[in-house]
Image (cartoon, rainbow, N blue to C red; front, top):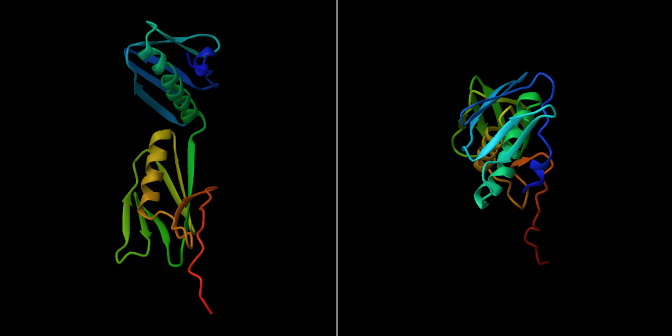
Length: 178
């Protein structure tokens, strides 16, 4: 059994948990998140929070217990605090501007790159720092990964998108023989 499941998942104040069949809904100050879970795991609302338990002890339910506990914790954290990813755009002439529901990027290509921003995300751009904020961890992470894949940081000068705090291992350039 997963260690995540041994303790109940605590619900902060102003966060509501509800179950309708296989659909789990968590409501909080930052919005509402819903997710379908298979009917192999029981979710019980107790005084300390939400307790997960397997209906039958099989290998499949043991593996799902930890996964579902992580999903539920991320849902609770998302509706109470939210998730943020910061991307730094390095390079001469590289720019990022938010215009409406599109992110306009100048990445050194012959054409500007426009990326549609999903409705549930909030994206801001200050100089060369792009901040992606939302209440769904998967959506925030996937959108950030898609942005980073447009121009990955190269190892010689470090130009491109990198996450805040990410360390890019730099290579030494060619040496000149004199």
